[in-house]
Picture 1 (cartoon, rainbow, N blue to C red):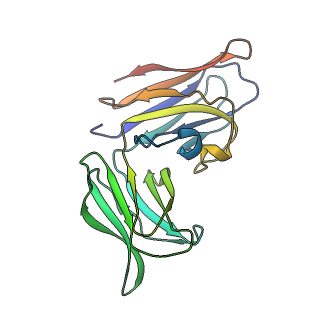
Picture 2: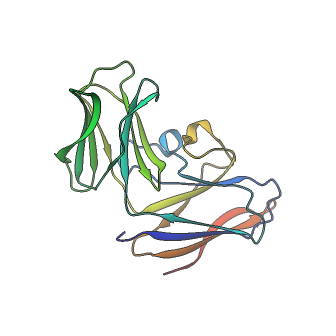
Length: 206
């Protein structure tokens, strides 16, 4: 993915329950469990039949770390694939700083060099919203993030942006995979009814 992707969602379904549409991405490492660790990056509510919602999936990514159950947080830094960061303590206190190159050119690595109860939590952001989180990074350990240009769409009865999927009330644990490689604009539609079920489809893209 070499540029921002403009996305339009259109509701063509006959779903009167008005579930929330959510969009997330996966950390493409072998141990990642989407149902346990996935984060709702975008949540689309109350978009009726024939109505639409526009948003952008940006190429740029930011990173931040938190501790003390999220009460304390570092500054947000630009994160480029292939870079490494470290949560460390300097003369001013706990900070997040750039620390050279990641172990792989396809990943973003974050190590923890501080000792704090519960460890640190590390999050990646796109468009100012959490797109991926590693909840516990212990002292002298690291989190690894591998991002592919793919989004996943689902339906939920109860979910909010930034929620982990494990805490949401999902309508299904089957998700629609959307590949954004080489795409600059795309329209995704929701189709279906209570008898046949619901499905997402790519209507157009360029």
